[in-house]
Image (cartoon, rainbow, N blue to C red; front, top):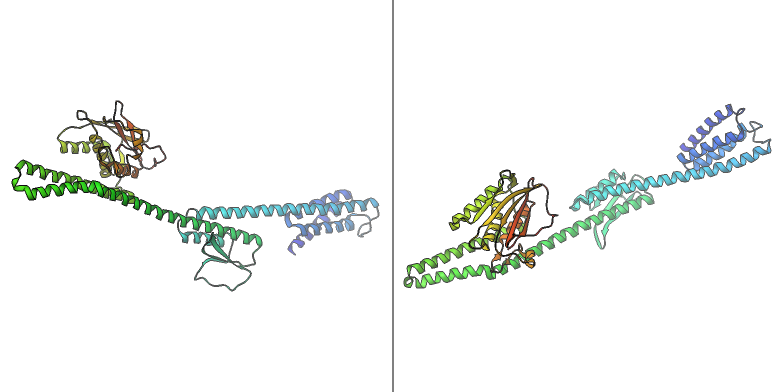
Length: 461
């Protein structure tokens, strides 16, 4: 009724204006004006209002603007033709305008639905919890679709008796059902609303399935890592741990059974062997614990601004105390910037690199430690002058429990790599000119940008 009142008021206004000008304009002029009015009404109010406006316009033109006035009799045959053409053109204009209106409304409705789906998928794809997906879905139902109530069954909310304004939708993906969405509206919903609600429920179910699969993959990965670590530890226990234990037991047994018959120097050598193998065993067990912490993600960093030159100096001092020889040459520029890192962990990583380099350094040469800055990174190079690494060995050098040619278990470089990567850095290796390998520890100066996308050639042994 409201639309018909608007049509009536509009046509009455146009008729009054046309009546005041009927002595100056022709019937064709009035017909064009009324066709324009009918077209506007069709676009704004739809088909029924447009057809009503076309019929009323025909009556108003005939009664008020066609001679003889104030009667539906038409004196001139030409006016009859014009009126007939007018009613046909007005009806067609109304239909076309109404169709354009329907297409516009449909396009707006689809755009609104797409916007709702975009916001819904954008929100639920960022969640990693079932309850968060439920909360986002019900919030979209209430805020965007204006539902009276929306909840996931089972729910302690107020129950509603079955009616035409209540809808139940399964949150189902494949054969698995994650819940039931209950939506209540003030009025009966349309087929378009049901389709949109079904699509929203399907998107939520897919998000729930993604979360479930992610959790399964994470658990599976943890089991695989644990199994791989267990296998590696068993392999280490079977060889690398049993070897020092066997030596310690044999040496202690000889001391106990042959102590009085052994020379003082022999007893001293056996005691030294026990001490050396005990230190080796202690270091190996410590490395196993460190590796377990790294692979479990339990490493805590205490980042502060520190000097890599001081770290290298501490490593060189430790080597001198252990060997009584100067085996390291250091080269650092005066303007090397400070870097934010955990001092103790980077000290451990550099110590592992230096120990590895010294193991393969020729007797009459020294390893070198160079510090330099390059763009947003600081490079710490440990230069070894021993054998050049074979290409087929490069990919396995930092694998846990990798055995070198000398049978040494490869935990040190795996731990160094894990520490450096925990600082968003890289561990690289290059060939030393003239023979040997150069290990490069790369740390970002600001320690905020991850460098994992760069190509990495990892360390030596």
